[in-house]
Image (cartoon, rainbow, N blue to C red; front, side, top):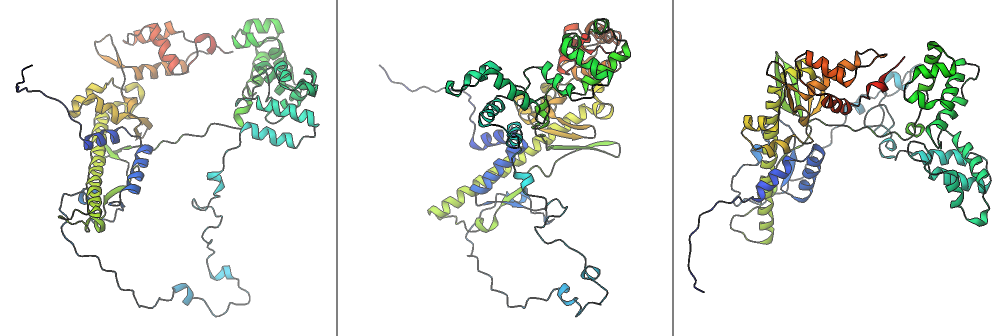
Length: 492
């Protein structure tokens, strides 16, 4: 086999560690970015946070490329021998108080540090750290206050364990009975009797086996002399399917009710809770910290980054001054490597902020109609449009708009929200899918509740406005908005 030398030309892309870090920071959310910054602060001694002191020492100034040459060792400052000045409060204390005066008349009442005041910092610590009680804990607490035999208490514990977060029983009575040891001799009637007691715990109706039983238990606690309550019981016990299908004509005929009586009975049912467990263990609210702030000043839209999403960083000048240029000791190499990493990290953060601000300004410039007039004025826009405008790749735009939020006068929106597909109009233009969903929502809100608009009718109305949308597309947008079909929206 003959050996030879060959010269070839080619191109390939090499991602440096700095580029990989910049791309990774670009796609992090606000919370993930704060965690990443904290990890860097903990691991890199040459990285520190800086405050806005107005001296011009910011991340850009701290991340310069100056060489840290030999510097003198820092000297410890001599301890001060100055006397501690006497506080003004101590000098202003009078020698004695008047006979008819009190301490509060002379001095303002100030709560000591750590006391339970009304300020934000002095709230009960347990209110932030205590774990929320679950539905099972709430039911067991009531069980401990209820006099029961040991066998009944064991049955009640099994029933509570089989109740889901909505408050519904997930297993049948027969299955519960079979789960106990045969030597206990527990019968199905005993389990059913204990179940009825648990169903009257707070919240009322918990432990129900189906929706009918849940509503029926709650209706039994209402005033039986009220005709609306009696009619509601009849509907729930015998004709709940007709109510679900909104067949009001058949309901009035079978129960021999007029429209006013049926409306009162339905209003009574609507006051009940079909998921009683949800009031005990509601889902915690999710808070969003916006990355970009959009305000209108002097008839112009201004875009700026939220200064609170990430702290400003700089290089620690003390440790940087300890670096020797020609020293290859382990300590000096450690400081030099961490200095370079700190510079890279600060520059990556600055690049992330610049990219985010550039993309946000482009979005605001293209969606001024949405900011001024609402969703119906949303313009169709895709990633390619923004990528072309800011001279970046579409993948970069996708990363920078994922889990990033914009605060506008109309609310907080994810940057992805402003991107949408389009449909053609009769005039040859384009209409955003977000605008179409807003129009559908507006039409449904203004429809006649006796004769709701069908998907075909909505498509016909949009066609009259010059927007060509198929019925299947209307159904898809309606389901995305959480709007039920027209037969389920019908009301009296």
